[in-house]
Image (cartoon, rainbow, N blue to C red):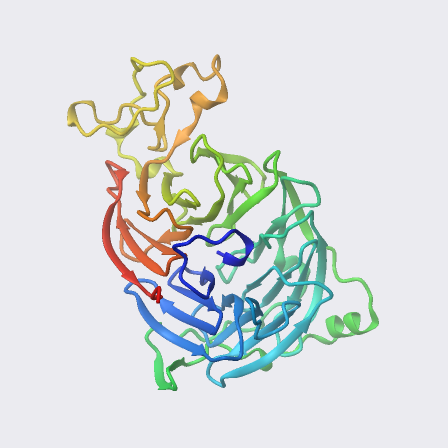
Amino acid sequence: MNLTHSVSNPNDAPGFLYAGFNQEYGCFATGLDTGFRVYNCDPLIEQARSESSEGGIALVEMLYRTNYLAFVGGGKNPRFPPNKVIIYDSIKGKPVLELEYKSDVKNVKLRRDRLTVVLANKVFIYQFSINPQLLHTFETCDNKRGLAAVSAAQDHAVLIIPGRQKGHLQIVDLDSLGYYWSAVPQRYSDASTNSSTNGMTTSTPEFDPSLQSPPPSVAAATATGRPTPTANVSIIAAHSGRLSSVALNHDGTKCATASDKGTLVRVFNTATGTLLNELRRGMDRAEIYSIAFNHDSTRLCVSSDKGTIHVFNLDPSVVTATDQKPPPRGPTYGEVVVYPTSPAVKGSGLTLNGNRGSSLSFMKDLLPKYFSSEWSFAHAKIVTENRCIAAFGEQKNTVIAICADGSWYRFLFDPRKGGECTRDSFERFLKNE
């Protein structure tokens, strides 16, 4: 959630520029006018901070729970030029790598083996090492939001970015671009914090990019300017309008997209391009700020500028047999049936995936597409209607929301009944002072 890309809200925390989850949604980082902070998601615990008068950071990309972060400067007084990517080592407390471009950097995505830098019309993919090797460059349509997503699983590297045409999505097999790590990096527990110095909590690094060097063939090809290997890329015509948000599941087998209209979210199989789900957030235009899969890709949560979070079911396996009865005909034309609370009629008005559906969905072949839409199974409301990003929590049946006013929410949803989520916890990680 880059708060510099949209109009500010009076409720926004002062100096708050950016918030984003790490690859596995266990942590989130914030960019501020004075620096950055890193928090554990649940429970909410501040894990690191570095603030000074040196300037602002408008983008912070974490590398899982390691000591490496990617920064892009921003705000009224940027700490780094906005056309540079800074790889920062939080243990050493200093930058270890710098990449410069001809235009402003819109986004950065990290994997242990890949570094992706997104500009307004180009995407650069590197082998992630102390001397990054450029593997490929892609062109995109106008991408001021810096849309991009990478898979988190170690054994399947997938990247999604906008295509050259409006509404199109490029799916890139990152493993097809060249070499990758010859050894799996050592994994440390999330609790492997060792010391705290000047307010900065340090942790044991999970890998050091300086330990790896590119094979001679790749290094020679880069040095001589010879073309890099042909990338394995597929294109999906996802929407008729411009893309506004994209997401990948953990292993990169599914992707989700929303357009600038913000009414529909579509889920695709990344290997075949097949449309798996079409989900309706609402009828009114909205700006989608985040889309996130749960770990086993059976549910999806979506947040927007309406101050709402919607939870959708993607897999019939999450619905019990009693929930799979076909919906009865409703009494009102076009009525959207809310999940019933009476056990006697439990399951009416639901699609096979367990989402709400129109009472006239049985006539979907005769009526406009609206009547065959799948609506959210559960939903939560942010009282202040602030912009937020959301993801599924580590606790079962929970959703975590990070809001532009500096607030943190944990919501509970009923996996059988759905409906309105219960606000289980609330805290402020940034004070509006």
